[in-house]
Image (cartoon, one colour):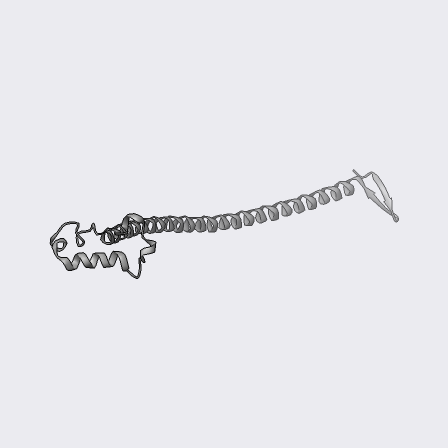
Amino acid sequence: MQDVVLIIGGRAITLAEVLAGAGALAGLLLVGLLMIAMRARREQAEAQAIAAERQRELDDKLEAMTRLHAEMTGRMQTMAEVFGSRQAELTRAIGDRFDSLRGTGAGCGGGGAAATSAPSTTMCADASNTSAHWPQRTHPPEMRS
């Protein structure tokens, strides 16, 4: 081990010094690689934590959107039911109005006590022929007297 391997600038370098230097260099490289690996692992753990937090936020937002969607769907169904019932009421009211204009309703000769009195029959005839809302020219032929 005392054999001179190299002479640099008048200094003789032995095999033991070369091996010691190589070991020190290998140790430094190993420590450097270990530090790089630890840093990469720490950065990866931070990235995973950030991704997990982002995923939790997205899950919370999705849950809120799902809840709002269900609420909106319920409201839309309620509105559809209300509009359906209102349309049925409107259809019934229009039908009653047409019946009263034709003189077939309960108040215009369609039965009941009012059908026998002359003024109510005249009133129904007046309403069916001269109503401001239903001029005679717009009446279907079967409604004209």
